Length: 202
Image (tube, rainbow, N blue to C red; front, side, top):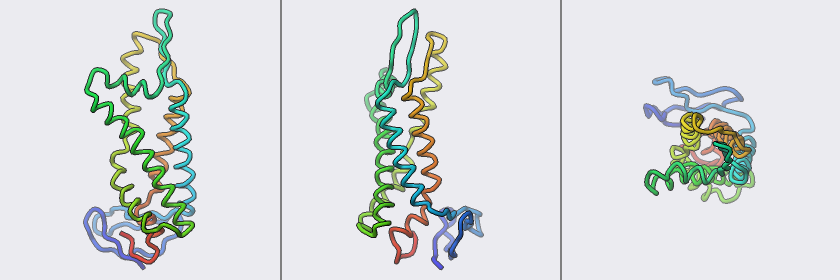
């Protein structure tokens, strides 16, 4: 039986072996410490790979298509990022690129490495460092915020032009959905157990 400190109140709790669907809850503050899911590594790997595929498709196809006064304009994903920052500072565009593309890609690649190395029982010291970085970067994954900004902008543009969604927009929505599903399976306790099989979960 392993011990783990609650993230909310720091109470040291003994975590028993759990079966699929069961969770460990802090008796002091009711915080859900861990929720056991079978084959979570396989699902994490599948979701991270799917997210990378959807992101690649997002960058390849038209994102939005505007039609006004008989003229049609096709906008790609990176162009839409640049367009949102045209009236602001370069640092804003850079921030959007980092939080929408760079950080999510780092998370997906990092998770894939951690899962594969744990299955092959290789590179575990490196996996621990990568896993620590993954949990630090999670808060900077803001792709869904960019989608919200796009939808708000479209409400304003709709009165001036006809707007159509390109295949890239659909891929971007699926990219966000798979990333959200991936976060569900990123259980901190279980991930630390697979990279530190002889240590206590941290």
